[in-house]
Every structure is written in structure tokens, then in C-alpha cells.
Image (cartoon, rainbow, N blue to C red; front, top):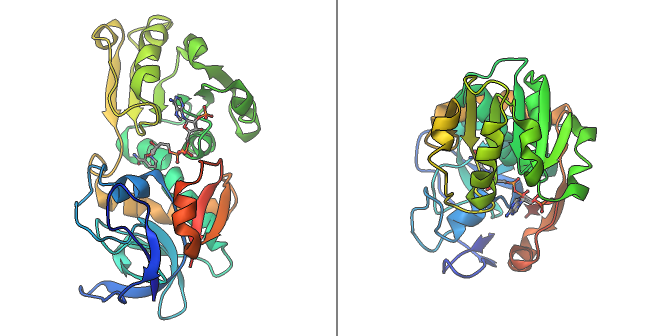
Length: 309
Ligand SMILES: NC(=O)c1ccc[n+]([C@@H]2O[C@H](COP(=O)([O-])OP(=O)(O)OC[C@H]3O[C@@H](n4cnc5c(N)ncnc54)[C@H](OP(=O)(O)O)[C@@H]3O)[C@@H](O)[C@H]2O)c1
């Protein structure tokens, strides 16, 4: 069979012949891969920089996929840390880390959506005690995960959602997805009365937004939970010490580890159903897996690249 294979952390994968995967554990299934998304997580694991990276080479990248099992059922599967990922004709999944999908779903759409959508879905449902009626501010709302977070916050009962980003033209599309307000980072105080911040940006922009946001709050004693999820602008952020004193700010992170794997898995069916019902806007571009080297290095696009073997 063919797979995308990484042999060096500083080079893109190459499409080549690769040994067939083998089921080892009692819950393992060898499956055909139908569609697998090129997510930030996938790239970070493939270049060795993600905190869950094993450092082992060679590796087949791909953290999740829509697959077909031996019984012909479609499943969405999220893989554990493994050197045998989903960018291949076939892979091995743990059936406990998968959810059976209806036959009529579009595999490319599901493969594009689940990873970015899961970020806000799990953060709001499992990482914090989010109450319907809350006010949510999304930093980095113009990306795939950010756009979906606008819709997911509303689906989960947010009364008011502010979409924040650096590009006013791209922000202008977000009210159509449910954003009540859009702001650039230099207007962040307009979202001062948020209860929850969903932060995909981190780095200087997030750190710089904290004091203006916190000091503009109507009630600085009202709790504000800031959920660190992505690091598009920087892996570290120079957080001013005053930010932790000026208001009732609580900083938490949401991702693999801070949310137990079983909680992610328990949320898969409900999220897959929401995507299937069309409640979440998905932008996907299917690309043949044979073109993986080229697609890996071409400029970023708004659409999530989904490899189709
Ligand atoms: N923890 C989790 O559970 C989890 C799950 C999934 C994803 N993530 C993380 O979430 C983040 C977003 O993922 P995604 O799939 O939405 O990515 P994406 O679709 O590639 O989104 C990229 C967006 O980032 C914005 N951006 C890039 N650099 C920026 C900067 N310096 N300042 C402000 N905005 C910047 C861009 O905004 P403009 O160009 O419009 O300005 C662009 O729209 C990633 O860091 C990813 O690793 C975390």
C-alpha cells in the first residue's frame, strides 16, 4: 500500500510504498482511510514540536480520519500517539477511539471539521463549567477553529459572542455565523464583559489584550475564565503580572492532557452529529494523498486540506 512517510522532522512527507499496518491489541481494527485532515496538530507531531510527539522516525503522519471498517461501516477515528498515522491507504484504529457515522455523511467534511471543532466544544463542555447565557470572546476567530467556535458557543447556549481577530475584512464574515460583535485586537475593551475567553492566538496579541480587557470590565470581581487553546501568534506569552491581580481572572488550558482522553472520546458522537446536521460551517479541500509533499509546503488556505488516498 501507499502512505505519506516522514523520515526527517525538517522535511515534508513523501508518498511511497509502505508496509501494511498490523492490528496488535484486542480493540485494534485495520481500516481503509477515506479522508484525513491536515491539522496543526498533525504538522506539529510531524515536525517533532508537539508536546505529545514521540520523536520516533520514520512516521506516517495523520492524527485522525474518516475510515471504513471491515464490516463496511464508516467511522471517525482519533489516533493515540503512534508512528502509524492516517495519511495512508490503510491504518490501525482503536475502535474505542472511534464513532460510527451514518452512511450518507461526506467523509471529507467530517475529516476537516472534527479536530478544529472539538477544540471549543470540549473546552466549553468539559474543561470549564460553562453556563447557558454566558458571554464568550473568541481570540483568533477567523481561522477554522475560531469560526467554528463562534457557532459552537451559540449552539451550547452563549447569549453573546464576540469574534476577535487582526483582519477586519475576514472578521466581517462572522456575524453571518452568529457573532454578535466583531473586534480587532486594538478594540478588545469592547468585549470587556465576557465571562469566557477562547484563545487560539496566545503570544504578544493575547498578552497585550489582557490589561485593556480586564481594566474595562464593568465588575472586575466578576469571574473571567480565559481558556488557552491554540498558539497561532506564539508558543509563549508575556503575561503582565497585574493581569492576575486587576480582575478575577482565571487562566486554564484545554487540550490533550488537561482534558482526559476519555472526555474527548465521550464528546465525539454529539459533535459528529452536529457536523452531520450541518450546524457547523466547514471549509474543506480534498487533495489526493499522492500530492502530499506539494500540499504540505504550499501556502496556507482558508480551507482545511483533507487528504484522500
Ligand atoms: N487544544 C485543542 O484542543 C486544539 C484543537 C484544535 C486546534 N487547536 C489549535 O488552535 C489553533 C487554531 O487552529 P485552526 O485549525 O483554526 O487554524 P487555522 O485554520 O490555520 O487558522 C489560522 C488563523 O490564525 C490567525 N492567525 C495566525 N497568526 C496570527 C497572529 N499572529 N495573530 C492573530 N491571528 C493570527 C489567522 O487569522 P487572520 O489571517 O484572519 O488574521 C488565521 O485565520 C492552532 O494553534 C491549533 O493548533 C487546538
